[in-house]
Image (cartoon, rainbow, N blue to C red; front, side, top):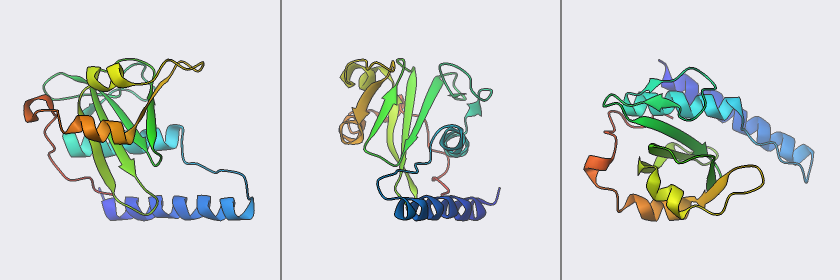
Length: 152
């Protein structure tokens, strides 16, 4: 896999959304939906050696080599949203033009318990700052082994 080319494509997408936002003030052109979902899944699979579930599977995105079911989130914002309590949660963050960093890698019960109330869309939000604090309390044995650094 040519991860340098992947990074260039991602940068091109961010350049395009920035340009559209400048052209249409007051409108946000965010990268989300299937595009971000697929990016997060392939990056996490590479980093943690995960077996991805079929696209658009309900519940979890992947299975770890030790059998844990893994939910993967990626955001460029300040929070993530969850629809259910994941067995294991990986949260990635990529600021515009920046590399992907791992915010949280641990049991899903921890962030689920600290997430906000269920919203009308069926999701519970939690801030990345809160996840960062929680990550310091997750022991190495509770984390998935990071096989490789995030490539983009």
